[in-house]
Amino acid sequence: IKKNLFKKKKITFITNSYWINKLAKQSKLLSNQKVLNFYNNIDFENFKKIDKIKARKKLNLNSKEKIVLFGANNPHAKYKGLDLFVETINKINNKITVIIIGNVWKEIIFKSPNIKFLNLGLIKNIKKLNYIYASADTFVSCSIQDAFPKMPTEAMLSGTPCVYFKNTSIE
Image (cartoon, rainbow, N blue to C red; front, side):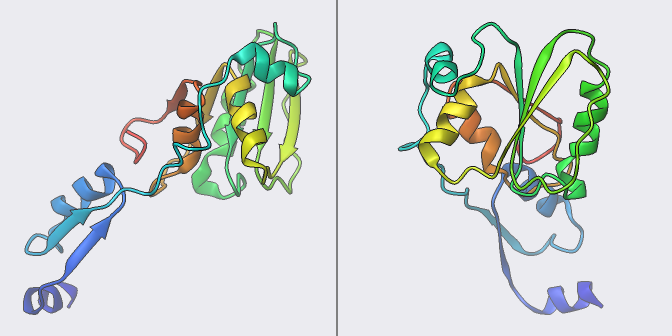
């Protein structure tokens, strides 16, 4: 039914990432339709590289710790991959600090005694968010289905490398 409907009308579809654009163009349903890509706005003004030691000092974080950052507005949404993140972190034997930012409303349990966990909650102050990103050794995005998450981009603008799944919109 949908195929017949789309054959009769010319519709322009807008995507917000290369990944979704590629998937849309591969779709049999959209094969005769125009598919354009417009990226989300990226805040180059407020997210800048900050020296890691300076950022940690401002946030009262130990400058010698290994810090892994995970964040999502709603980290408990299944597609954000928090369960995958926790499962993976629990396999690490080294001492690390895990910081999670976002609207955390369920308990998150890390099994290893080597993991120090900080829940910073939802951060609304952009400058503080920039410092949090800059303080981490890496930002981990375990999102398995996301149109164009801004946090990995903001982390990279802040000078923090990002780990993510291949074949997602971040790529």
